[in-house]
Image (cartoon, rainbow, N blue to C red):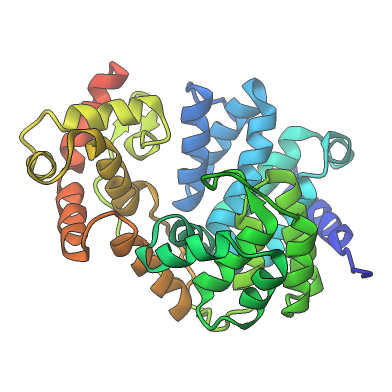
Length: 362
């Protein structure tokens, strides 16, 4: 099959963006570990906090440049997604390699251009929500077992004909393969993208997703391509309601979530307090699972929130299922846990400051 591969025009678009913006002043790297810097980069882009995102970028480019470029690709497909496909194309073009970036002015010049662009872009997290459903939604439990036993020919039939989007996405995942599955499943990305071409994904979107998958190895990219077939994105954007924010040492508290060692330590310490979420966890959860449940709740009420969110009916439904039905709890208990976690954020920020060895202020 001959495919159009139109990323060259996004390379040109990125070059024009840099010429229009000019070389962004090099900012002082934020003092942080690589894991803290990656967390800050992603959450700052979600919240449209450009300067913080750029300072996190400066840290990573100085200490772990490969981590920066891979993380930038993941952020594009996870947090911008179908809301702004041209931005995804520019990020995919930027991932082509150091020699290409050097031709546009160097690592900082290109990094700053795509970070500024992603921070300003509308956000759509439907691909990540859909991936969460594939991992843990009880509504797919039987089909996870059934599809794992099917040959590729039968999986293609499911992906082409099933009415339920999560089921089509699950079949696509099985075709492509995923090392995160238990047991790990080997597949064929070529067959997966051939399927996306067959179901009608636009050539430009397909090329963006292929390059994104090749550079990041994440299923988010083909899921964005699949979601591009769903109509209904609204033009207007909405801001998620953000909880109280505290500065802790040089970082905002929301950067210290479950993806940093300090963030998980703070959640473990929160369980030792008399906060409502802690009392509920002690009464309702086994000891071994408490930190993970609090971490998942925190993601839903703080670190996963976005400003400038562009969604439609499909995306809103995926988010609702992710938040309430992929928690390992009955929906009523999930709602209660989210309410209690939101109320505990001031206490958590104080504990984060203790863990970081510094003061905090709102």
